[in-house]
Length: 240
Image (cartoon, rainbow, N blue to C red; front, side, top):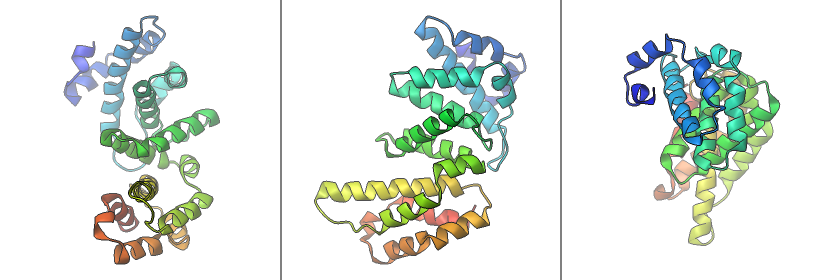
C-alpha cells in the first residue's frame, strides 16, 4: 500500500481513505517486524497529511481524528513516540499527534507535556526542515487555548522579553548561542499567534514588552544579526 500513497496525489489518497484503511493500519503498528511498522507509519503520514490539507489554516480540526481515536491509533502512535530510541521516529510520531490534535486539546496531560516539550526542543534543530515542521506542528496545537497555555504562558512571555533584551556580547560562539535562543523565542511567538485572531493574547504579549524589545532590536542591532524569525515574529502581531 505504501507504493500507492508515496508521491500520490491528494485525490488518490482521499480515494484510499474512503476504503476505510485506518483500522487495519493501526493494527499493523503492533507488528513485530520493525520494517512493517516503519512502512505503516509512512502510509499513516500520507493519510494524516491529506486530512490536514483538507482543512483551512484557521481553527478547523482534523477530519480523521475521531476514527484514529476510536481505533486506539493515537495511543499507539504515542506509545511509539515514548519507546522509540531513534530521533527520526520520535519526531515523526510527534508531528502526527500534533496534526491529529489540530485546534483540539490534548487532554492526556502526559501526552500534552511530552509532545509539546519535544516539539519545542526541535525549534533548535540543525535541520531546517525539522525546525519548520516543528514550528507548524506547534501552530496546529496552539489553535486550542489549553494547548497554547502549555506552549507559552504569562511567565514564559516575561522570560521571552528577558531573553530578547540580552545584548549580543561575548565570544563568537556565545553571540551565536544568544541569537539562536532569541530566534527560538521568535519561532514560539509565531507558532502561538499565526492563524489566530486573538486580540487578548496579542495585547498580553505587547503588555509584556515583547513588541518594544523587537523594535529596539530593529532600531539598534547590527542588521546581519537580525534574522527572519525576528521580523516574522513581529509580522504575526499585525497579520493573524
